[in-house]
Image 1: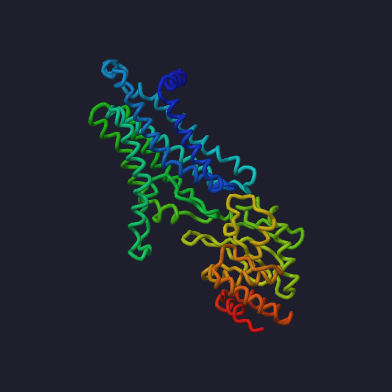
Image 2: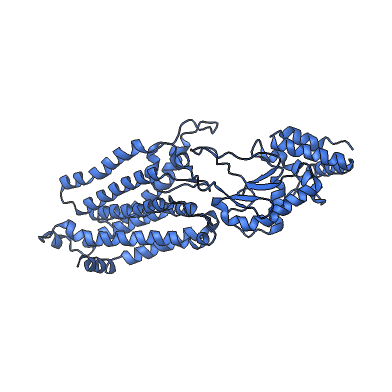
Length: 458
């Protein structure tokens, strides 16, 4: 009987229209940048949470519109004379709205699933609580909006709430975070723990996730906020309204001291399963992280072609295996895995070679990127070695130097002169010099790497 009443309430209210608006907005946001989460479930869950910056204000405004239904139809005084208490009359519509909001959020999440399911290497367990917190956030916003609409049944209540909520979710976290920097843009203090009360996630890199403990605390806070909204919706009198606020106050008082400082970027932790290596041993070993396991079939061919190309010119200093870098973005918590750094391993960064989103990159482009990675290292200024890398890659491939962009005349002249000087050396000395240059890169001796190629004397 209760379910039947709930369905009637939903069908005869503005809930279907609100749901359609939320679904259109969520779909537009999710389908705009599919490359941001392709192949990775954690990033899909995080991106779905980022849509809350728009969906929560809309759910709040939709709740406010529903909350003024009795006043809009001029039956509030009539219903106030009935024996049945207000909360009993409010629960069916509130429950129906919660079910619809949860469904809309899950559908928004699932809209991105086709870009992940076919290529994802694994499904992190943390995806479930991250998604659950997002759904709970919409329910809390919807119930608070219904309470506000009943308390202030004005036409302008819904749009005002939407604007205020959008400003709070979008600009306040940015303002608080930026206030932690000094005039030299140096971070002088971490973001306060209270920022994690906002459920909209900034972003996550491929190897990190939101800890389950943080998701649990956020769920506790949002459940308390939803309880306050529901109690305010059925409250009659000032005392009842004052008591209805207690769950939100207690929830904030309990969760804020337990939440970590630093916002989402500071609280994110390394996902150990994401950085595990998945390898192809049918030939020279080629390894990628489990987070990018779908890349393995695509990279095996170009990787082994790159190894063969280097070995043909540098038989004594060529790498014998390829491995994806597992270097975690600076500022993350949790220990980072040891990264192999030796002459025998070519370490590449999947993100730096344009493979984010598993874009349609050709085998030739992958080979070119891997050749560049053989002369790159995660130390110093990557751009500082841009010109010498162009020289050594042109020497390896017996092709004109490719600067990857429109070079200045000075850069073109410098690279051409260095390449010409290198090729004028005896063959044995060419191999010796380029081998020494690779050793310099692996040792992060970038100045020596530059001098070995640009101070060549034929």
